[in-house]
Structure formats: C-alpha cells, structure tokens
Image (cartoon, rainbow, N blue to C red; front, side):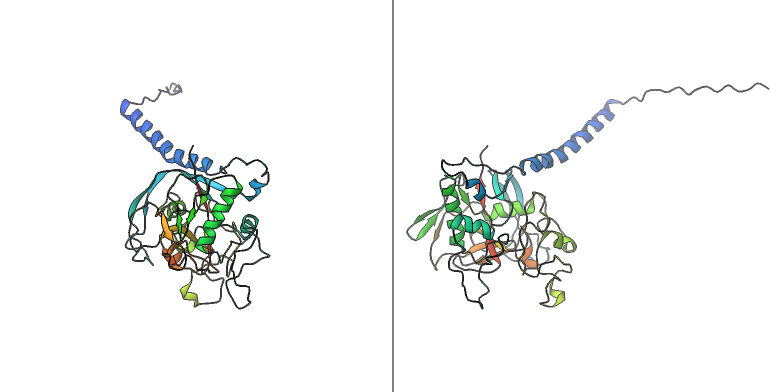
Length: 333
C-alpha cells in the first residue's frame, strides 16, 4: 500500500473586495474621529496661558494661576426632566461657546488672593463665633468669604499686574463688562462654567455620572462628616469634613479640579429663573440693591446642589464660608 504524500497547503492571499475596503476605511475614520478630538484637547488643555510680562514685573508669573485652554463648542446646558434633584430653573437648551477661553485649573486659593490683593478678603469677620473668616495658615485652601464685587476686583488687579486692560469698568454705581474678547482676567459666564464642568460629557457631576464615584472627584456632603443624618449624604467618603485644599481629588476630563464641590463658585451672570441665552449681561447695579448673582458647583455642604446643572442665587455683597471663585481669560489664537 502506497504511503500518502504530505504536501503543504497552498496559501492564497486574502482578497478584500471594494465593499470590504470601504467598511475598513469607515472603521478607521470612525476611530480617528473619536480619538483625535480628545487627543487635541488633552494637548491643548495642558498649555498654561502665557501673557507677556510687563517691564519691571519679573515676578508676575508667580501670580499667574495655572490655566487650561478650552476650545469653542456647543453643548446642552441644564438638566433632563428626570434628573434626581433637578430644580425648576434648569431647563435644557442648546448653547454655543463661540470663542476658546482659558480657565483656572483650581479655585483661587488663599495664597493667590493674598499675593494679588496684599490682604485677606476685606471685611471678613475676625470674631471667633463667625463662620466666615479666612484661614490664614492654609495657603492652598480656596479663598472664601469673598463677595462677588471682591472677586471682580481681584480679576482687575491681576490684569493690571500683568499689564492687561481690566475687563470690568466701574462707573459710579455700576460695573460694566461688554467685551467678551477682553484680554484681562474675569469670572466665567454661567454657560462657560457649565461647559467647562461637563468637559464634553452629559454627566451629573464634574468627572462622573454616578453617586458611587463622586467622592473620587468632589468634596461633597458625605460620610466623612457626622451631621446631618447619614441617609441625607452621599454614601462614600472623600476624606474631608469641611473645605479641602485644592487639587486633592481627581480632575474632570479637561484637567479641572473641584468643579463639583469644595466651594461654590461665583460666575458673572445675574440670576434668572429661565436662563435661555448664553449672552452675558453687561451691566449690574452696585451696592445692596444689585441683582442676585449665580453661584455654581455646590460645596462640601452639598448633595443635589453639587450637580453640574444646579444653580443658586446669592446677593453679590454676601460672604459665605463655602463660596469662592475661579477665573478665566479670553483666548484668540
């Protein structure tokens, strides 16, 4: 009986028909389309926004906060009707951010405020029984007990130190800002703030969409404090019973820290119950009769008000131990 001969199999090249090439090309384009924007953002947002140092002010770079550059874009502002904790003033609407802008990586700290203003927040009560007083020995805590007016004054002073034209113009009993392209420092608009907090995602909090993970990203009302009842708090521990130093928890996808929690943040806009326009208001009366301004992000005392869409009204002359601010600048490539 003849022994069978073993022969190597013939290998034939795989032929991709035109339809298969089209599908493969489409898949590659999809992958690039998904990854490229995030790659660009990751690179661009790590750029600190540099301004020229005026003559004779070599130390001005020490005062300049670290900032990240955010691209122009559109997003859905507000919250869906079924979001837990939703307020009646959070109606969803499409908003377009027309210009790129730079935003501070953290809330303005005690140290930054003192370096720029040469003082702690003015008027902060020194008496022991007052909750609203700055903590002098903790430079990396957020500056608190700052009024809306004082936050604007900080922005103008920092602009002047860098040789930039201040954005805000006091005029008797009014403060005016009517140029979104001004090169000085300013407070974010309410739309800019929420755009930065969401970082391209439709999430409830800055960095996450779940209550289980919020303590990784935010200093909120959680099991780290003894009061109120445990059931009224997030079921996790962020490690801080009150205000925390900046940068202690994880940032959101655009490398911004404490957009949710820690301290609530002043924005430029006057409070209205139906914010439907992203255009900034340009004039506000000064003094006690000034319109309430918006604060965003919640604080270490917040649960439902820590959501990205949550809004709160505060008199611009008010001080609070859980309200601070974050600054932005326009950017034109």
